[in-house]
Length: 222
Image (tube, rainbow, N blue to C red; front, top):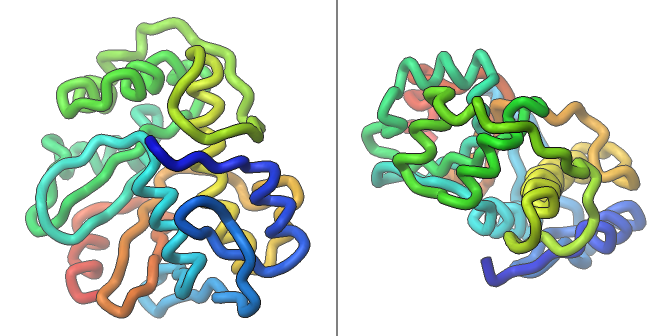
């Protein structure tokens, strides 16, 4: 993975002053780039924090399909919205887009399946994940509030903790810009699906609802 972030240090900085995610960490930024609501229902980041958040998304363990505009999706096999999405795109490809899927731990029963994707981030394994063919694996306990290095090494428990913390850190960048306190690392409910993409204007946006064909059509125009 190359890049390593210490989440505790990152959030301590964010709690004291407006902060940006650089290529290595959320670091100093004198002027905040406030989150904003776009008329299409998208919420966006601009400036250095957006660039750093994009780096975090790129560094997450993920499986990618297709070619075209880059989109990152947190997705769970247990999420009904995600299953609706999977029914619309059973091959997980979308014409004109390169979609990067980040496996999301929605419940304890999914931890073993997510771990299999993290250990083998291949298209074949991820398709089995979305088909719920991996959910007979035993549950694995992990710490959702892990605050150490965010690389992808260590035991099964540590790997799941770091992966979940990586996702929480991306959400925390939005919380900081939206004016939520970030001492706890996350103050809005962490749920799936979450979809991120870069626009031609340079903004990194997030769609917080069920993503599907209609939203991709909106995205084509951005």
